[in-house]
Image (tube, rainbow, N blue to C red; front, side, top):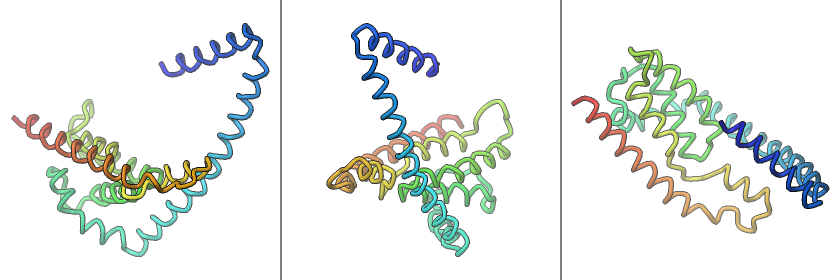
Length: 193
């Protein structure tokens, strides 16, 4: 559906540009936007590589395992049906830690592995399990203490104070995470009735 919407918007933009005599401006905007998109992607690729590497070093040195043990009570609360020593606990913890640090791109590989493991634990292959839904809700709401990506975007586009949003980001993501956790717990309890 989005492909049709984007296609429609592109066609409308070109038609309006031709009808108003501004097709040169449309062409210039398209070329400048593609150049800017490539520059932004290269910047974000560097940031992603740095933080993904830091997460791998943290895993190799045992920091992730220690943090996993530290947040195990939270994982047990949110995912009471998971086996205690299953690898999915580490994947979920790694994903949560990366999200808390604002490293959404570094969290993605761990999130995919966690979802794959959760799928193997799911008896009904036609429906997502409560654990899969809870993980998705927590991953989407994701409390962030340091929104690295947003700071990088703001810096890339010339913000004088790119870290100025820290307080607002913490409050907003804390609120969304609390709402997500409450929803997950209530939905799990209602599902068992």
